[in-house]
Length: 328
Image (cartoon, rainbow, N blue to C red; front, side):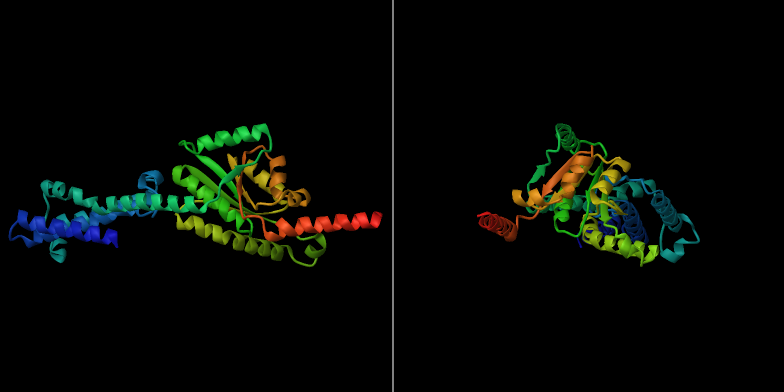
């Protein structure tokens, strides 16, 4: 839409000004408009690799195959303009150095417009994520963990590359953690994101009746199902990531993977729970805090359900009352 309009305005402007510059020379105006269209599209190919990130953040010449493709395409344009036997097929005429200098600003019209649109979308997305995300809470596992978290929080604002591990399950809370990381990524694109889904193994009684390949395929498919909405979230923002599916004890696999990948931080989301629930619950987050030396950032997820808020205390009170009656 917008980029197409900018392209059209730039090309028509070049065509009109060329006619004013060379009155009666329609071929010259057509050639300059043709070269402007082709060259601007080739330049825009570099910035169009991401609909969200600046061409400078992803690297202008980071894709060598694209550089070669654009170079060959530009060579073909030059051949159409300067090779005598090709010019009649395209109704082109040779251009002078002054013609190229005249067209130069128009080459960058649509690429510049696309970069400005990216700035707008980044700001709008940051505001949208900011209004949806919930306040974060840092886990107080130890003084060393808190110090590490403060260090990582400082690094988020700097240029250093960060490796972040996000454990993913089928709950909605992990989406809250991903939203938080997306917001951090907007402020610092030098971030390497790893998604990890851990599958619990079947008991040996069940595994004994199923082939190893069948079990492997099942866990892989279930892992992909759990990762699918998270992949979609990151793909919508054009954020690169790596996905891993492992099998075993969740807390141990999370800590081992963070160590193996040399992660700087683990970001986990946990549902808000009352103290009674946490007392009887075997929390993966608590286990990770005990096992890992990597800083862990815990994001508050869904609010406490009415059952947990009222049902569990009422059930415990009823159990205590029954116990007292039995003792009497």
